[in-house]
Each structure stands twice: as structure tokens, then as C-alpha cells.
Image (cartoon, rainbow, N blue to C red):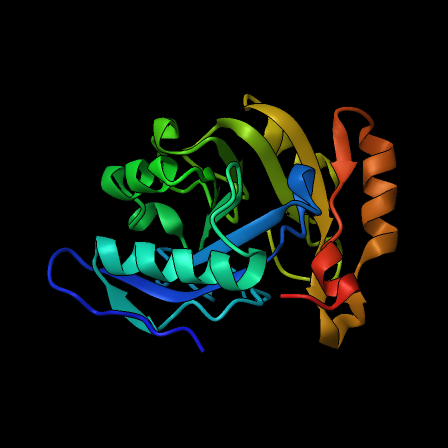
Length: 221
């Protein structure tokens, strides 16, 4: 069990911090510390299939307390804060809380920072080394980054990507280095919709690729 100090100063609402391998997208398989912030500006009404419990902060920590938590997690998971270790700022919506002091402090400790954002608000890209945008609304603010990852809801699940034409409309005018479609994992609908996602990627062609949630396949966080 990691002991977490609660100190004075500006507070970050954090849901959890854990060490694992990045499971999705271009950096799948990369050792990473996940820093999951509490809170989201969209909510479960927009994303009823969301599989993350982000609502309530389990920890309310200042900058030093947050760094201590990340350090202890890295030591427990990887034997230390190894140079170049990936720090995944996620949520919820991490851009609501992730700021310059935290970014600077994490980089000073050798982390490479990636953020997973819903793109509904502009993101200061200078705060991160890799920006993944996964929009949950057809209209979104952050139109450029390193990776656009769309959850392919297909014909059964609710959402903004019921078909290939919708995917094309959402991606139109964006500037990302890589483009991914990811199956939606809705257990009551039979689990990940691999078949229709594969068919959609084949119809779209390059630069689209399929992202699989490899952490679920491997049974890790």
C-alpha cells in the first residue's frame, strides 16, 4: 500500500495513480504511470458506455503530494523513476487540472508526458510530449495533436460514430500524426465490436488503423 501525504497549497483531485503498460493507440505496450484525474466536463450522459470511474476524487493533493504519489508508484511498479518513463495524464478530463507547474515538475524528474483528452476544450500542447484526442462530441475544439482516437460505436451503441461517413466528417479538417478507430466495449452488447470496426478501418484505408485495448486482453490495469 502506497502512503500518500496531504499537504497545503493548490490541490489536484486525483482518482488513482497506477503503474502498468499503455494499452491503447500508438504507444500500446509502453511502460507507463497513469495519473488519473477526477472530474469530466462531459459526463456519462454524453458517454454512457464509459468504463472509467472518474466522478469522485480519492485523493486531494498539492503539487508535492502528487509528485510523491507518482514517485512511489513508479518505484513500486518499475523500480524507480526511470528516464523516459511514460506519464499518462488521463481522467475524466485531465486538461481541467493538468497545469504548467505539474508538467514542469514531472519533466524535471525525467517523465515523458502524454495526455488523453476528449478535445472539448483547447489543450496547451507545450505541457505534454504527446497529445491523444478522443472526441465524444461531433463538434470539438482541439483539432490537432499526435493521435486522433475515435471510439467506433457502430450500429448498436450510442455515440457520434455510427458509420464510416460519420468518422470522415469528424476527422475532416483535423491535423493529427496518427488516426485510430477503437472498438467500443459494451458487455451488454456482447463486448468489443471488433467485426464492424475492422470493416470500417478497411473501408477507410490509410491513415486509419485499429486500436485494440490490449490491457483488457492481457488482464492488466
